[in-house]
Length: 388
Ligand code: AOS
Ligand code: ZN
Ligand code: ZN
Image 1 (cartoon, rainbow, N blue to C red):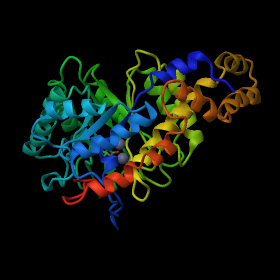
Image 2 (tube, rainbow, N blue to C red):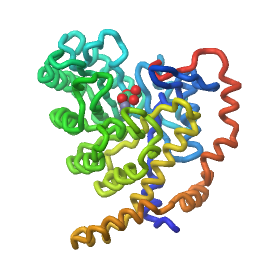
Image 3 (tube, helix red, strand yellow):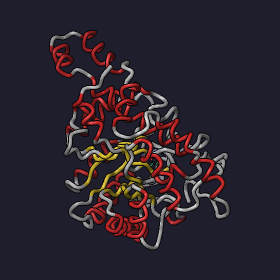
Image 4 (tube, rainbow, N blue to C red):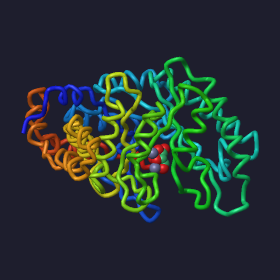
């Protein structure tokens, strides 16, 4: 099969941001396995991320997590990244690891603790100035474990108050994206559990505040593509955190658990203009690689997003509309399924080669010997792991 030129034009401008924490060790509360060559510094994480871009041409930006990626000089870090051929992307705040946040951060009942959490975000905004980042991503671990433990209602008001203070400090070109998650680490209630709450909170702030949709943060059976369609319709889909989940927030490779769901999500992105040139939607990965090699895990991930985007773009939307309006239930369904079942991999491999990229990025990276080299070179120091 051949991929139409207009589809290739859209694919050529696709950017998928990779997270710095994907290159560190990670695991479950039972065990974190170390891997030889795992980065010990943010600079080594950036070097690994640059490999993903080098072999795919898809991942020119790297998201940072503060304080995990804290350095003294962010302008210097930006130059270091640029020398590697990548830029610094979204800044992720972190108010979930300090003892002081045991009962919440931006929603805490104590104004002093809320202010401390606000101040952390203001520091993140300052960092964004130096790194040239557009987006501040906020994910809160805030919530409670038992009915009656906290005032659910009061915390929504405190959340609004805290977010307003952060929003007020955003620069003209900067944005805030508020991520939702239905549970974990809190098990009874979470302060930003769903897209509706995130939407209500960001809508109250203004244009520069949008929703971040993490694909792993929904209850089983949730129709995520519906949420995508609705947020695009409302002009409030700011970004994706892509990953796969089998059970809860597994942070597995995007497109691994349910490729069809990824296709359906990306089809709604296409329909809603999320891939248009002026689209506000940022595509990011939020993943961990607990047992597989991390750099190839990221290469596989960005390729999965690209392949499924290509398939979503192949849907004949004129024919689909005719079938839909004519009440042709099975005809409409088969138009969608035809695109989903199209194997775009050989055509994408050819296209990649025509752009000076390897036809098979996974194989080219494996043959480069990079993993063996970093395993040999990166001795001493302590390997970074999720949370540090
Ligand atoms: C947590 O579940 C979220 O997905 C956040 O995006 C978080 O900041 C990220 O996963 C790093 O821990
Ligand atoms: Zn996330
Ligand atoms: Zn998550």
